[in-house]
Image 1: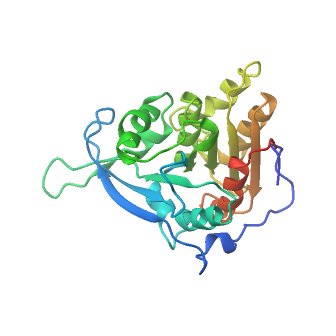
Image 2 (image 1 turned 135 degrees about the vertical axis):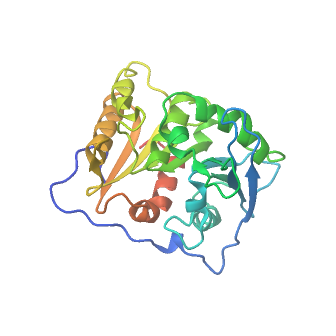
Image 3 (image 1 turned 180 degrees about the vertical axis):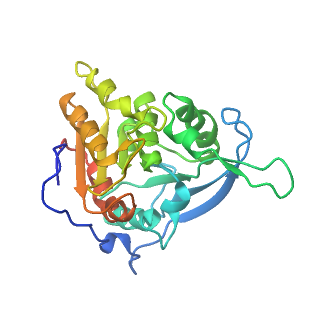
Length: 282
């Protein structure tokens, strides 16, 4: 573990999934419902799948925590790198997390305009862009539909945004723009690079040193991640973590072996969620 510190010079290991990432015989599985959202005004013309996870321990009498996962299809897969519903089942059953609802959101696609034409992904526009547009989409459009009828906490300390790669910088952007609604961020191999402006975040974060936003941020980055036209992912994540540390944010950076992959992030997901939602300061 590195607490927002530079990477070690030695080769780093790739974490492997543990028991919390595997179904346990005595742990009840939450319910998962798949839906389609196609009525956006903010991202007009887009269509996307999303999934809502509700744990068996949920009760309408008590407000539940909330986690919103970007690239939701990858996180919800039972045999994928993340297996987030299984992780949530296990952590909630052990009372290491309170009852927590999760919304897994896919990026939008724009259907082809003619029969047989391919659809176009809206992912980079939604995830890599700076500003509050995607946050508004979640808060004003998708989440009201997804969470209708559920009792979910309004306390930002009980609400997290999660993503990988472009979804990682997107998760930070949502919390940065709406810290009164989302106080926890999990960014894996985050694209804090010059795809659509994310490289400016370290400077923006440093400028808040006298009044840091109430955010707790977990970051994971692979030492062999991408170095290309848009930037150097390991250095960009270390720069971002250094800025968060300087400005007084609660931040934890895990430098791991591996490259631009969800393998390490998936193995660390249980630990990341425990850390993000722990009540004590770190």
